[in-house]
Image 1 (spheres, rainbow over the protein chains, first blue to last red):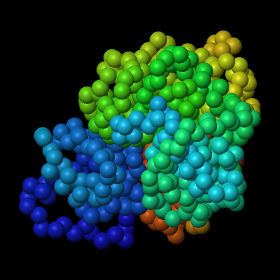
Image 2: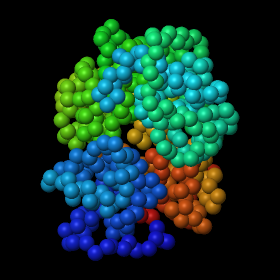
Image 3: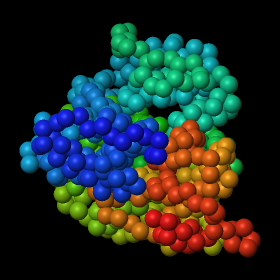
Image 4: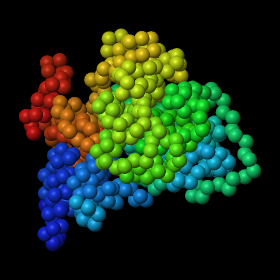
Length: 100
Length: 430
């Protein structure tokens, strides 16, 4: 973790930043990760080598996200790597599909 | 009816034609690593290997290290795959893109009961995977008994929807062999999210059997997604809490049966958790308990096998499950041992001393999965490099959380490392 740059936050509208922070908090809390939410760079891969999550984590996140934002995740023809490609992609997906 | 793919039925004639097509593609190798993620493709690949007297290899994980070990075990191994994946160091054969044209009725291949159909691998404590060969006859005998116990033996075909991979022993038996060997139809998809499970169930006709695990049952209940009518549920890979079993039966309106078994033995016992904790053994299977060590043998079991749970016999064919032997690690149904994980950790260059251990705390989580932790003495390494090295050697499910770098492990005078001492160290370091 020590040799990663501090995460660059692109200029975003306040609502998106808030959602990004919220979702980062949710992930760290749900998975009891040893990393601070602010350290999750928006474009860092969540799955596999980046943040190091696996499919069990993905399922856990999907459940907390569905409870909190009313989004039902579907795999469809895409695999987990797409929606969970990065924090930004996950936040975009939630923003587009949330019902709460 | 053999299968359903995207809701479309696949009949025997198509299945037989697909088998011939894949058999031709497999070439002359005697060993096939069947890495198909689509359950129908897996079934075709397995049947094609059978029909050509090739052994299907079913490792518990596909890490780079395991791939190297498989190639050492069977130098002529080829990998049958139906999706783009990481580069493997062995010849890969792509599952045909288009289904075969069904010819005039093809003969059903006759397979000798003694033919070795599959070889599964478990992680031994030395780090080298141990092979367990399974004969076709015993595999089929086992799942025909399963069909009887599930109450689906003498019936019209059931549609089997499973959330588990076909390569894992449980999925292999209960979602592939149960279909092929007992006349039921398997659903090709492997649904992951609750909404996908609902969709897969809706895409097949009744009667429906859901083959799943405690992780997914919890997820289904937690997600509060409406499921179409299910007629029977099967659960395995970790003991199911009675409360969760009750809630599942109530919520989904179907009996929930639970399977107990192992990679080495296959399934060996069944119970209905809402009716009581006792398990009933498969015919002929015998347990011999000596203190904490239990051996299973007889019936369809190929060789005398040590079980890594504490089992208490209550009758010659019934037992209670008291929990795991302390070395065992079971994360979301994937099994390993602390000894194996420690061996892998300590084989990493730069690791002077390291140990995995179980954390005491169990947090409430939607999936109910707790990870295994590790303490390591590795002054030259950082977390990223250590985890990358571990990723080469062990399944991702076992990557330590938390991973703690320490100056020294709390070994006692005889060099042993009590779990309690590791937990205290962890509590102090965090």
